[in-house]
Length: 537
Image 1 (cartoon, rainbow, N blue to C red):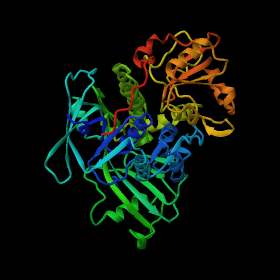
Image 2: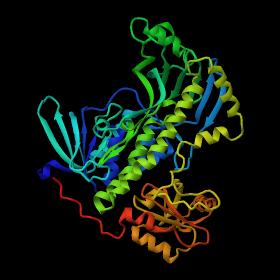
Image 3: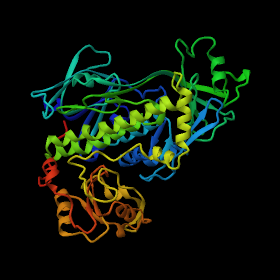
Image 4: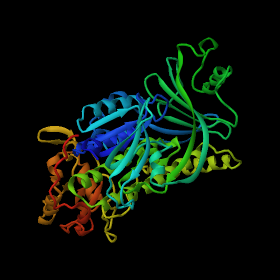
């Protein structure tokens, strides 16, 4: 194969997950080529919600300030009955654990524009639009530990000629109809939810009756979701009955009836300038999980790996979490010679979380929208009663990102008393460092780091040196006490942070040392020098 046809990473699909993965890889000097069958941004209504963890990921790729200018923080979710009486409220903080509002509303094409602009500024990234991938084939040994290369076959728009590329790794960010998923022999596990909904995005200057957060109408006959997306932008989602549609000559009148609880549309204004339907689409919401996320050096991310009903706003969030989890590991394998077994931790860490989020979304879909059976009223009553128990709504709100399961990259001590920090995210407060007020991650960077509340011991320093990690004392960071309190709650003198700011290990109070590094050192190859970046093709 020619040098021009070999790429370190090929990413199939240039939606927000694919572009974010490319930007994250670029931070480590890993070059990537994105292949996208569309030439322009996809215009149909899709994600409108991200959480504070995802905003932290956007910070890591350098678009958080621009995103803040177009995003609107939301106070949470309310469950309403068919008469719009509040059943329960799930509040979301304007300053979450990750340093951003826990819920932010936005328009996905605007986010994609920001990501594409950032991509264009990175010499490590290249985007080919109007390209359809027709096959992905693992070369040589196709076992999970195979190192590649991977052959990607594609056609350019307007041509029947097939062309080929070889890659050290391929990321399948190609959506629910993923060709990559078929290529690795993955199949869907059905998590038993499928409903047809109509999603409608509207711009209006008319008065809209809203509380600024999301509303979920719990009704067995007409469940609906409503949220304010921007200054004059709103979204409605309605479940459609069999054979029902919003197309044809009666569509405007039917739409007028559907939105009547929120906004009054005079007959003369139907379809007029005061109420503009920007776009609408019919979607079938499904709950599915791929049984396999990796084969050799081919990986699934986003909707190619999991489908989540939208009731808790985690579909796009899950895909960006995939990219954040995988890219630092892949970069360490490609650039620093880490063991390919490090890549096994991607599915091991992300799949249980994806299953958790899907099941939570399905529970919301059935219990909160009422389902379609005679038990709907009973479920709504149970939900209402449960949400009146002190602490329940707060627990549900914060349970979208539970701790990662124990594995070589999440070291837990089973006899450790108190709440273990391993597998959880380090908080991100504002800190003053070197005379400047900054977010913590801007100091931590994208490598390993040791945060300590005590003078570092020789063993702690040795671990940091082996990893090329910075050692930061919380007293030198001059925050509001968040970091010291966090370490104290975990009964830890120090925490070892991975590049994605997840805690790999802690130094329990008074012990002076981390867990035995033999569990993770063989995967990371910390004693080896970083490889030189390959020449550009």
